[in-house]
Structures are given as structure tokens and as C-alpha cells.
Length: 474
Image (cartoon, rainbow, N blue to C red; front, side, top):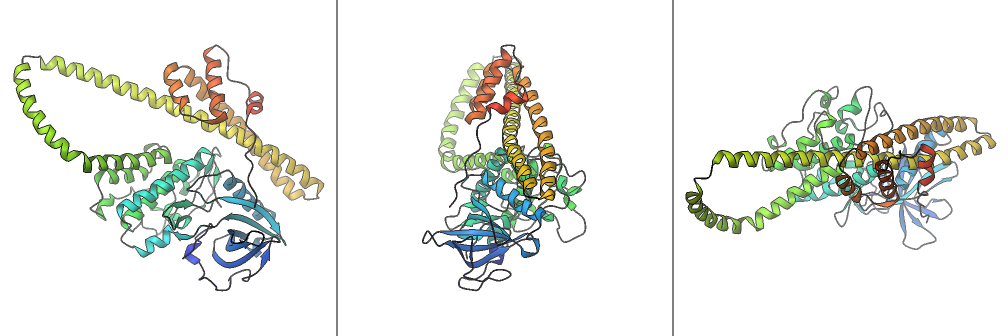
């Protein structure tokens, strides 16, 4: 079966050679040089088709076309354009790519990478008892890597579920459908937006305030389902049980799941965001570290056991020789060492969190300032084109962007001042893990603060932002 980018695309895929249904007929040419071959699927807002480029033989794409009933309605045009602008910021092996956005005969079209494979939803339907454990771990690592990339680019997916993950013929998962995604830093979520069974508690209840940890929870629900073939919460009953009920231990449904994996799942599904993994990168690293320990246990442990037995024999003899050593002194020294290690780890974690917060805030300032400039030009264009409704919508977005840029600049200032009060060597280590122009800006600002100068004002921050990345068109 073939699948492509778009909501639940593979779940509704047509058979090869069948006429397109629910929209355009097979053979329809849109955008002057794209011929539709078949319908791949559809969601609430658009239909997705497999298309070929008439100018480049054999080149295939997935085209998401706004449904006819939503065409010529500025609000829905803006929603699809917003989806395109977010997806265009992403370039990662585990995210479906976006090539272009164009209008054709009154229809808004989103041109995306065509992925040959099947959705994770289809794979679970074929294996109702859950996936093989190593396969589930491999797929989950890829999904979390893609989501972590989106978060670093300032984007929340907000609808992580098996239907929005396509697994290609090489077994690589790719996250798709950013139709209801949000920018990190927006204060509230969308009421009712998302798929109920996978929504985080904070997506379900007012004031719907969400951040990147909402995707951590939804990914945890999906991981639970991948491992045991069922959801952690009853999605058939009334209400949203995840808002008031803790997730069950996955070993109740699949006893062979190791305790460390069960603990990872439980951490991802904590109702309180502060108790979850604090990002999809942390979630991914927990799985990777478990795999490393498992490989170590299978390969090195047997040899170590033999060595340990010999070591124990020697240790008994040594103990007899050193038993006069004061146990209480040794215990006190060990306790002091452990406290020092714990304090150092806590301090390093605090610095890492501040560096991450500063990076996210500064990226958001630069990214949203670029969007601000684009939308400001859009207002002028809309006014000159006699489109007051669109101009008003863009002006509302400009106001929101101004507030967000100011808030993110303040968050950056706060995080950098916090770093200035920390050990310089520890901060330098944390900053060394960052890359790109923004990382260089953070290092320069840290040096300025330590020299007695303040963090640059907003205008200075904006003047140093890198230019927007160009998106290739085909």
C-alpha cells in the first residue's frame, strides 16, 4: 500500500489505477504541470492526491488540496498557508517535507514529499496485539527525533497519533499533517483541536495552555499503543479520562515489557507536565539509553559475571586485611561524595535548562520577526488589492506577533541573566552544545553580561537575527 503526507492518508488510500474519489478525477492537471494519479486520503480540511510532475519524468509528489466547500474562504486559505509556512521550516529525515504552496483555479494547494509506505495506524491494525518490541523502539526513536526537531524550530504538532506517522519502505517513520500545529510561545491551545484519545490533559480543559510537553504526552499514548495494541485510556466513553485518571501500568496488558520501558511510558504519560519528560529529546534519549544498557547486558554481562566472581574472592581476602578501617569514616566520605555529585548534577541541569530556554526564546524572536515582516507586507498588499478582511486578519496576527516577540525577548533576557549568575565554565559547556548563528549570539551576550554590560535591547537582537531559510521549489 502507498501512503503520503496528509491526515489519515494511508487509512483511506485508493488502490493503484482506481479513479480519484471525493474530488478531482484521475488525470486532472493542476498548477499547469502536476497530473493527479489517485486520491491518497483526506482529512477535515483537505484531500491528498498522488501527483506526477509533467516536466520531470517519474517525479512524484503528494498534493494536499483544500476541500471545495472551504475554497474562496480566506480563513481556510490562511489556515492551509499557515500549515505550509510551518512545515517549510522543517528539514528532517523523520518529517514529511514541503516543497511549495500555490493557488490554482480558486483552490489552495500544498505540495509535499510523496512517501511510499504505510501509516503506523495501518501497521497497528495488522498487528492488533502490538508491534514487536525492538521495532516499536526503533520507530519511536525516529518519531521523537522528528518532533524534537519541530520543537527546536518553534513548532508544536498538537495532533501526534499513528495516523499522522508514515513508515516508508525502509522502515523509517515520518511525522506528517501539521494542520493544527502551533508556534511555541502562544499562550493557549485550540479548544477541541486534536484527536481526543491522544490529547494531553492540558489540551482538554480550559484554559487550554500548552507547550512542547503536550506532544510528549501524545507520543506517550502512541508508544503505549505500539507496545500493547490498545490505548491507555477508554476513548469510547464520555469525557476525557486522561484529565482525571492516571495511565495504567503497561505490563498489565503486555507482561514481557521490561520495567525500564514501562517506567519510560509512565513518565511520558504523567498528567502533570512538570512530571513528564521535559521534551521529546529527553524522551528519545531515555529509550536510546535503555537500548545501550540492554546491549551491554547481553554482550558484556556474562564475561563480567565471571570476572566479578574472581573479584569477590579477592575482595573477601582484602576485606579481612582492611577490616580495621573505620566503617563510619568511609560511609561519611561516600555520603559527602554522593552529595557533591548530586549538587553538581543539579547545577548542570539548571544551567542546561536555562541554555535551552534562552535558545528557544531567541529562536522565537528571530523567527517571529521574519514572520512579522512578511505579514506586514501582506497587509499592504491586501489593502492595495481591496481585501479588507484579509488585511484585518493579518493585522490581528501582527498584534499577536508583536506581543509574542516582546515576551520572548523578555524570556531571553531572563534566561541569560540567570546564566550570568552561574559558573562560567559550566555555562560555557552548555553553550558549546548549541550550534548556528543563534548559539554565537548567546555566547556573545553571556560574555557581555559577565563584563558588566546588559543583554541587547530588542532592536539590537532583531538586527542580529539570521535571514530566513530559502525553501526550494520544484
